Each structure stands twice: as C-alpha cells, then as structure tokens.
Length: 124
Image (cartoon, rainbow, N blue to C red; front, side):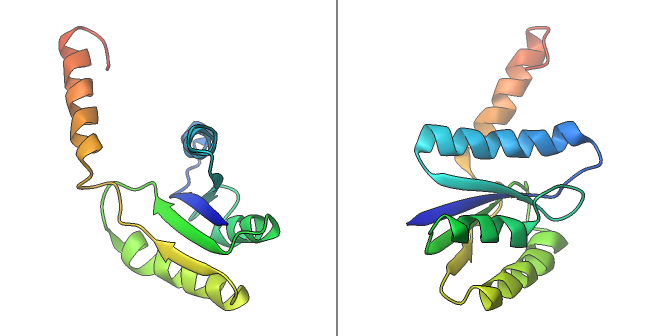
C-alpha cells in the first residue's frame, strides 16, 4: 500500500498549518489515498511522526509531496536529511520525494484565477 505525506514548512500562525492539514485531508478524501500532513518546524506532526503514522497503517511506500513553491535550502538539504533519517529507522519502507509545486501547470492557472478575482474586485 502507498502512503503520502504533504510536507509543509510550519508556522507560528496556526491557520497556515491548518491549511496544510486541510490539503492533506482533501487529498485523502478526494483521491482515496492514505495521507498524513507533516511539518519541518513549528507544526505537528514532524516528518518522523508522519512516517511513523503511515508505517502503523501498513504502507510500504511513502511519497513525500512538498507543500513548497520552489526548491530552496529546505528542499535541497533539510528534507532529504529527514527522509534519510526516517528511512534508516524504517528500512522496510521506500520513501521518495516529489519536486516542489513550481513548474506545475496548475500553478499558473491558480495565478490567473487570483488575477481574474482581483480585477473583478475580489481577492480571487
């Protein structure tokens, strides 16, 4: 069985963390997937906790999907190190990481939707 982790940065602003959790819940509900949220910092669970939750649910493969726009230090250095640590603790799991959201065609559509909403007098 496959599992997914929606991996966000984490924030002191709890509504930002809730947005990541809501995206993970919607992905699970709409896609029929086993999904957990996780945070680099300032949010719970962290990546190790999310991996543990998925392992307890019997997944054999985990795909970590960064809830980040671009490939910066956290995705180049921090996330791979966390995945390496989790993989060492769970040798029976295959854990991979997808690219960030940058470059995905839906991102441009989201920008266009925001622009259209702003021109119509709303916020998008």
